[in-house]
Length: 492
Image (tube, rainbow, N blue to C red; front, side, top):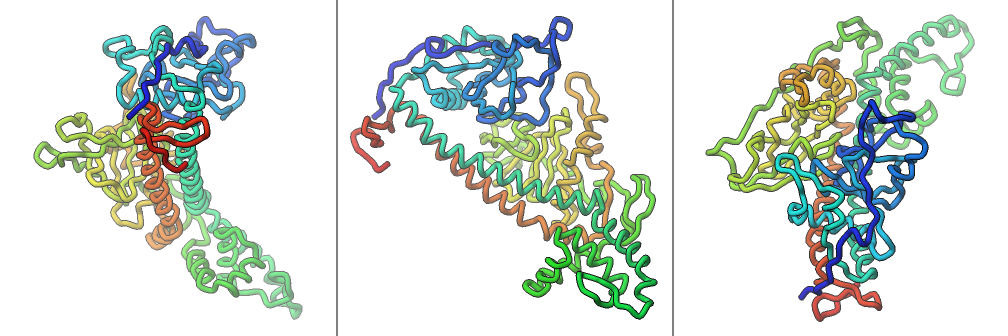
């Protein structure tokens, strides 16, 4: 049994305004970053690529945002919103966004969850204007009819659902850190060539010390007077330091305390060459190849047909894939699926958006859901071997690769590249054994990320199941802090 909360007009309980019109001819002041429609996701902000426009000093009050403001999309996906938490100072908004400040009668986090519920269940659509491109105007926003439970219940809804979203955000932060760790190793090994350069520098030191080694006096090495090791050992020790970040003393302790890990580190160091060579991609380690992704991947064109498509599919779209994160997966009956929902995605695939590649619509497919389907707007890269998967993903989605694709894209309002351009991205290819060692090193990072995403999916489903019950009052809190379901009291 739900409670019949009264409904109120939103405009009576908030102050709202639209952001500044983007007009290069009329705008004056200094160039400053602002939030546009594409920077607002459901419950979060994408702040990696902020555009700028001119603002005058007096416009901060009118167009600036403060902690706690609810930022709502006016177009694009009208109603999509997130609460600003001072992620960056002195931020402002463009006219494509509404800034909503709740009055004392309304909890802004409750309002966010109402928008989330309304967006999922199309409750906002009657308020939209426009036929082809939908908009939620300022007048329509103020006229929205929202449920209006007591403030104590509003806060309770925000706390319960907010705790779930906090855990989801923590998982996302951990996953971002895990991927950054994998990228840092990749950059050190395959872009900056740190272990190779460490060997080259060590060789120079070793040769400089040869006159000392030939004398009767012992050479100072590793902090003690001892015989200088042979060149190969000396270079390997330098590469081990570059790979592990440990100094000589720490490596000595590792050898004593964890001999297996030390032996593995030693084997990895031995795989790196000790000289460089010229190539069409610049100077690269000797024995490595200046090639293309096509040397290690296949362009996967597998697609569902009318005969093979399963009754239900999980659909990944370009708009909901950003910087390695699939923000949401839509479920469709086969007959209702968008026409672009055709590309079959498999474990180990890398997907890269070919439309507006500079938007960074890419992701790594790891342990996919059954019948996971991608937009035909993705280039799907399938590695030739399992242990190539992480190497391919980081190579194809590096800043250099994405910038290269963005530079090659053409087509006016929707610049794009062909999938063949993606698969032929230039790259430096080390020996297979070193790529396999990289796979072993970073695989656990991506495995843990899968677990975190699964946990977040469960939390998200729990939040979505609780949301309508909390909004309707089917679950509610009493004045004493007890949670009440219909007529029964359940534990807090």
